[in-house]
Each structure stands twice: as structure tokens, then as C-alpha cells.
Image (tube, helix red, strand yellow):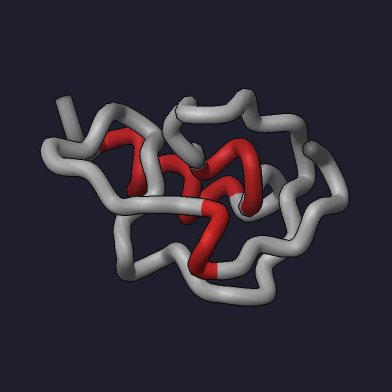
Length: 64
């Protein structure tokens, strides 16, 4: 849900990464969701870093 602050209980890491999905390098505790993210859906760069266009491009270039 947008505005929710993430804790370790909110996520698990999965491999392989999907396009736009956050990895352990970007996923830090105490980040706040900028958009809704359905339960069991991958956390994407758009969920947290939607304003950082450079970071969005890098993350969307990797993954399957």
C-alpha cells in the first residue's frame, strides 16, 4: 500500500530478477512505498524510486 514503510517481514528475495524488480542492493529497511504493490507481487523500482530516472533505467536493463 502506498505510504507503507517496509520492514524485513514485508518481503522475501527471489531469483531470477524480473525486469524492474529490486534486488538486495536496492531494497533497504525503512523505505516507504510510493505506489501500491499487491501482495506477492515483485517490488519494482516504480514502487520505491519512481522519481530517480537514472536508477530506473539501470534496473530495467537487467533481469528477465
